[in-house]
Length: 129
Image 1 (tube, rainbow, N blue to C red):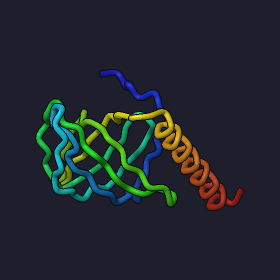
Image 2: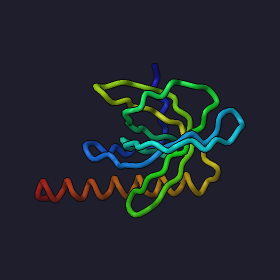
Image 3: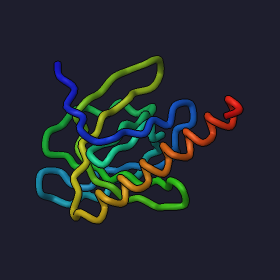
C-alpha cells in the first residue's frame, strides 16, 4: 500500500488536541447529529487523524464536521473517514478533508508550519543549542 500523503503533517504526539465531531451530511442530505468528543492526533492541509472511544461504522457518502482550536485559531473542517484502526479501547480514524475554499487550506498550512517551527525551537532549547 503506497503512502498517498503529499501535505506536511504535524503530529501532536503525546498531547492530542481535544475537539468535537458530528455527522454533517449523509449522501446529499444535511444532518444535525449530536456532537461527540474527539482527540486530534495529527493535522495536514489534506487530512487529519483523530481518536475516539466511539466505534464508527464505515459508511460511504458520510461527511463529518470537526471542530477544534489550535494556536488560538478555531477550525471547523469537513471530511470523510478513509481509515479505521483499533488500539486498546480507542479507535483511530484517518480523514480526508473536503475544503470549501483555498483560504481554509492555506490557513491549515500556516498553522502546521507554525507548530513545526515552535517544536523545533523547543527541541533546541532542551538540547541547549
